[in-house]
Image 1 (cartoon, helix red, strand yellow):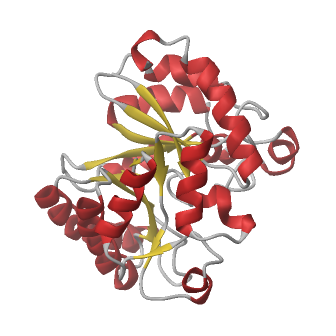
Image 2: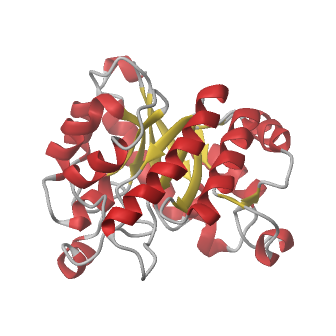
Length: 281
């Protein structure tokens, strides 16, 4: 296997630049993979070229061609939609899976999302079962993984994430492990959690958390949009790599940070660590 480096397109969010600019910048830094964020319909900022999100109304082959032009590949799609709200998530996920298959992304990443104020846990799990069943049927036909991420109220512990993973028996449901969210949730050791799920991991959100954010928010939140530059926060990246290095398949560390300079420093830091791993060359 090999551990590869990618970057979530959130790294250009604060630069008010379009998706194509971000792809070129990721390639210039040296990343081998990118992880686009996709949305339904049309929205003003992306249409005007000030935001990185890609509409699934756009031709996925355009994205495939753009990536080939710059020598990068897709590690997955950031396709977060609330599994607990099937009126939103069922058609969104099914479209994302079909779009990913055409664009060349092997994984669509998602989470349970914020729950409706009027539901209880029993109903929430029933709704998630419905959504994941519908999505998994499409994923199995197209050979696309669904990566469940620890991010919200039920998935903030290993037991909670497992309880969602186990709702539907499908070979195409896996784990998108987020190193930053698992740390901030505060309910477990994030490295023991990664050990626990590593055989089911299909994608990694490589998110570091600054000391200041960790001190202020750990145990009080279930996740965060982006982290600091990898190597400048609390995450022990050598330990993460050591846990993943014995897997029998390729895994992409998709860096989640908020700026181009952070993406550059993350690439430099993680590349140096991966140079010490013979099989990741």
